[in-house]
Image 1 (cartoon, chains in turn brown, yellow):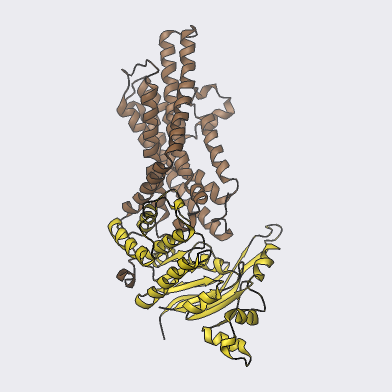
Image 2 (cartoon, helix red, strand yellow):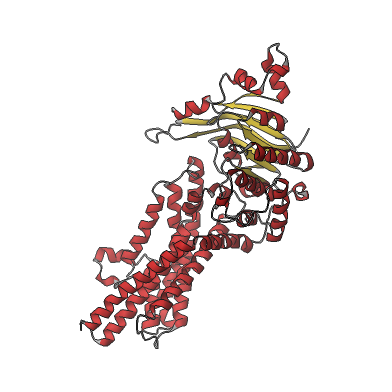
Length: 283
Length: 270
């Protein structure tokens, strides 16, 4: 207790260490809530299998040539896996406020001397790692069910798309996480609606061209559209990084725009919640 | 003149009300409150539930923005130098507020790491503080398996782990059994006697306030109605009676004109 006589330093730890505290905390929660993790893993797996098996049926019933059916299997498999990843990342980050309200810890976390940018960075790093592990497991198990040909795949291109795309998805998730700060009672549901909208317009299970023209407009503004296009291009058509310039460029622009925008929005919303007393209120 | 640890000037906060056609404040939680707390003091804020104690603490903790007024912590403006002030303060709330599925150790590691303290140092300090609080060795169990008293002791440890120079204790012993209450109170006294910490303590336990506090302020309906040392407050309310016949509850009743429960009733009934 001699340390209490010491006036604390104002800097307080390296930035990376502060961000990593959130990764460590989320990992501990993840381990303790392992039952829920298992449920979400199974749900993701069942969704992947259920949707991709539709392509198998089309092939078996002669609705498409063997090559086209094979491509459709890969198209849907990629769509479901990318969605499993994106929804895990969006959930983990956008629940930054909601989760702490449930636990009752929000005030103690938000009054700590951590810049909000590092807080959100930590949550984003965990979300991306968590989403990657869950999606890899689903992918590994799903491969047992389908005979797919990855001989064309350019894995470096696919990884580049997911890496750059994850930055913009993190920005989008932080923006969705702002909603529970503004609307304690309905913000959580509103965050889920953001996810649902992305699912509809981004071409997860179909090409965006099949959408009505007015809905296609929204697909241009969804980073998920470019992530899906890029990964399908890399894995189905073997597009290299240089051939993925359109998707990587769009994702980089989204990242550059969304990260500062989401930080500004979160800071503003936190300030609003502190003015109106909404920080503590339960949803 | 002693160093000022905390200075609150003309602080007000209201909640709710219509936005249109003109924004109106429906409930005034803190109403033009001013107070000064010297470095090394234990300063008590006594009031019923709903009197504005927790709102005052939340504003000092940077968790609520005042409608008007100034809060200075060691000369730093709480609104303008938020991050610097946060490093100097910590808080114990009436609810332990933890990640209940995580162990005490995991919670303490997280909540101290975000104050920039190294894990090794956290473990050393946590063991020391929890030992003084007679916590035993249940650090690795999920907090939901611990009693309310044990959880609150972990909450006290969490707050003192970060070596705050201004500690905000918001009803830290509410709901505790007498044994746990005594452990927490003794720890607070020890911190005051041996270490350079200033403590703002809110409570509606009159005996606790009298035992721990150097000075006390009474808050009723969001306003300060009396302030002084426990002895000064007794003298104000004695009206010729022997001081030993004047309990702090009597003092509160005399000086605020209310029972300790009354503000709560007013708030509940709108």
